[in-house]
Structures are given as structure tokens and as C-alpha cells.
Length: 194
Image (cartoon, rainbow, N blue to C red; front, side, top):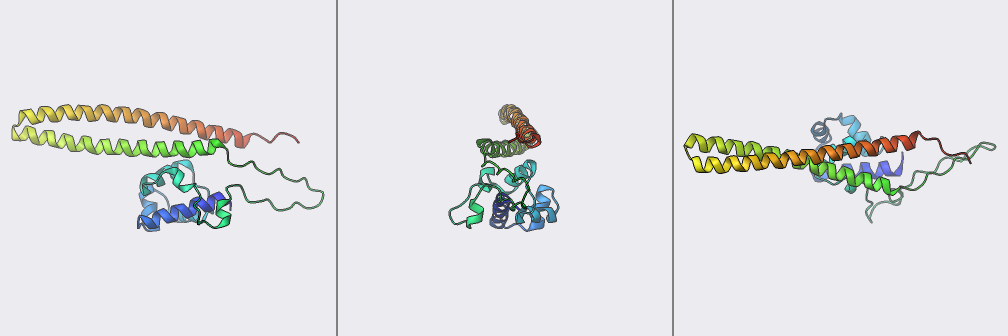
């Protein structure tokens, strides 16, 4: 287990308790198995970016909320570097320590946060459009032409805003895919010879 996985897992559990959700309730809300969610909470498995985005949406949190240590955290959780490797046997080459988290990791958390906000914005606009369409139908049934005309104008404005939000969300998703590709390429690149 890595200390960052323990930190993120404890934050997920804390947020779930604050939202008064059961393990099964949160798991079904984000489309996961409760056993897997429990493994994330215990820090036994690393939370992938798409699951993190779903957790942010379901718990009303920013991605950064899951990564920032708090002053009252136990000391092992405050250390954001990997756990030290076991000492190799005599004659074995010693592994090089991993570098501390890079600014790219912080940018990834910020991108996740922006993507979660964009996703919430699109869903909100879709609800507004549905409500406005219902009002327009009601005004037309009641024969109130002026209110129906105003309602149609607002409906077209909401639809244009939703189109912009979808474009922003798609751009952020492409940015996240770029982050994931960059992380995968660095993970696959062998370390330089010593």
C-alpha cells in the first residue's frame, strides 16, 4: 500500500460518511461493486481517474479534496512519497528512489476537478431545458402566446448554453486523455542507466 492510496481512500470514506451514504449506496451511485469501493477506501487499490470523477460528482467534492493532507492527519498520510522499498540483499542492485510528486500530478487533479464541474453543469442545463420545455408546453396549452414566446426564447438560450458546456466538457475529456497518455508513456519508459 502506498501512503497516497491510504490518503485518498480515507478522504473517500470521510466524504461518504459526511454525505450519509452507505458503501452500497455510493457504489451503486457511481456504478461500482461495493467490494471494489471498499478496497479503494482501505487504500488497497489505486482509484482510476474516471472513478475519481464519478466520486467527485456523487459526493459533491473537488478532486483536490481527496489529495490535500490535513493538519490532523496521521504522519504516514502526510508523506506523499511512495513507501520505502525493502532493503535489497547483499550483492543485489539497489533501486533508485522515486521522485516526489510533480506539478503534473497537481495539474491532473485540477483537470479532474474542472471536468467534474463541467459534467455537473451539463446535467444541470439538461434539467433546466426539460423544465423550460414543460413550461412552454403548459403556456401553449393555456393559450398564453406571450409567455410561450418568452419561454421558447429562454429554451433556445438554455440549449445554446448546453452546447457550449458540452464542447467544454469534451475538450476537458480530451485533455484528460492527454494526461493519461503522458502518464502511461512515462510509466512505460525505462529509467536511464546509472
